[in-house]
Image (cartoon, rainbow over all chains, first blue to last red; front, side, top):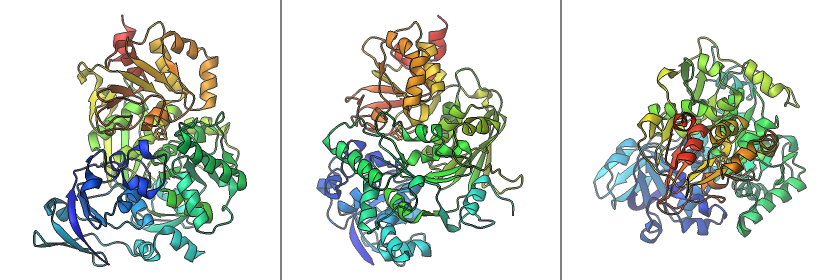
Length: 162
Length: 422
Ligand code: SF4
């Protein structure tokens, strides 16, 4: 699976309240959530981005609550992938369970600049910075989690397993 | 093979003699928990998957605590999704307003979660129940949906960091301060993906309420779970509550840890975490002059009887400072009643505090005490992220209930000593 888009950079410890503030958790509608994506980290984020764009962040992205609204909001806003130095663990499993691709890669997190054109080969974990002219390799996704992604998320996997 | 308590519980629920860190396992779940924010998504997924029956109606807990009593039409509709589902599937552990309390205070109190259990909750602070010697961890709504159907969840067996606390606690220091201190030392990702095992003589002498507050914030260090090997304190707490058998596990002497970190409590003062991360901790004596607009005493961290008693001890005979609001939220109806019967309500009301019904309320910026731009709060809750309690330009300082109560009286962040020695 190939993804391509421009990057938006965020720092360390971006928490779920920044990704989708709790004041909007009285809805589960992806479109409505998408409208507030990253609002408390960058007020104009949703207005600026294009479909397919990529978030590049520092360590511990998605720390805080277990709200699945966070990966839902990011995915529904049109972000195709999040690259970070590390992810908070519940955000990590939620993203796989929802089918939002995320990649852990310290070098990419440090070296990719905002606005770079980036192409990602998910199967290989290959991140190509077309603007910066460099290629990075993310930590491989364990086979079980690949099977989750292949099935289209945890619920599809459960349906097949039953 | 030598194992930690976490590994033993995971192995037992996978039907194996042993598991080791890094392994992916599918384990049986004793309790699967959801609340009024996370369960509606899970119920929707449950229906979309075409499921007709839950795996076990006794092993699911649906707790409408976040926006209840419902703050608006949308949240009322979410609560209704829980209620309708609970009725349709005759879910044993559903609590209606009037019986409901903050989930992580309610489940231990009602004996729904027990030592040796494997618990998942679609709420990050599910790690609280580690205080009972259970493996419990926060997951997403989709994990909850899958567990409600299959009774199973997938995990990567975590590595464990062992924390050993020694020494007697200084005055006004509680479990909350131990965990804030620890997060201040290791950072908000200091235990990422890993298990935090708390041990040592300090922990052995800690009350169950303080242990619950301690394990509650393991997630604030990025941990998968926090856990304390059960002992007599645990037994005394669960024996009168349990309605089913439970099991005590303990770590082997030679179990493998990725790290062993020792703290002497001699130097640990009451802690205050500054905005906007729980790791920004300072000793109370290093806080300086910070004026405040609101104080919240409550939540799954510090809304229990011990917390309310400590606060009452400081508020007795004192008044909340002018232009400051003090909101006290007993975490469950049983705590609410006990506080009333013990005469704490009179002390609270005399001091000009507001007593809220049990709810998460302002902890997550939901309702019942939202901050305006530029306002500052001292709160006994567990998160001080940007906008956590209201406007993105408001600030939250985390503390224990004694510091919170003293701060309400002084109108600035204050040490309990300042109020108690006049
Ligand atoms: S009291 Fe706060 S932290 Fe605890 S469950 Fe409620 S919202 Fe979450």
